[in-house]
Image 1 (spheres, rainbow, N blue to C red):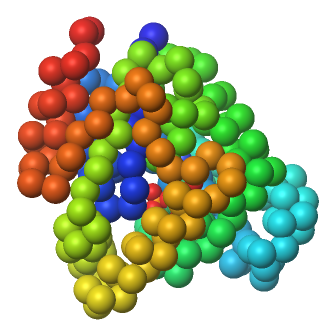
Image 2 (image 1 turned 60 degrees about the vertical axis):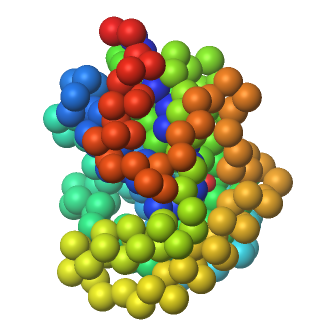
Length: 218
Ligand code: DC
């Protein structure tokens, strides 16, 4: 049983790295950002104001969203329908950043994340996996990347999904989100003291995966 955590800001390549690493090691991976995005999606669908903290927390009881393992990936289901694609719309990202500041939402999702890993080894990527969710993880990595490079990557990623995006808007959105994620009171984005920090600005995905694999003893 092995827990590997990969944390870092939006656009640092975490999800692609986690996916590749999962394929290489044959260990399932969880994009925890999609869990915060799922809560944001739920709020939008139900006209719940994401700034109304107690209303958001109250509504979690009724949230019929499941996180289910399919092969080596966890998918998000709403009443049996896969909603992963919808979660990546830019406006959902903004709402996700808001709901991620609410302690009751974090407690709820952190408990789910721990539950999902009870059955065996897992790779988890997000913001607070090495600091809060699994402080005793076997391996912890923290990816850093310049903000311009992250914006370029995000535009490319959105285009691959068929969503047109303007570089300047994406850059601004990432800056805004960095500030929200780094300055929030609960679980702010920061490397765990024992995390291996990797600067991915000039590295390919394969380079990052190789660096991570070189640290892991299976
Ligand atoms: O990685 P992402 O862009 O899909 O994450 C969406 C939002 O969720 C982002 O604003 C940060 C938040 N998040 C978090 O607070 N903690 C995590 N472990 C993962 C994501």
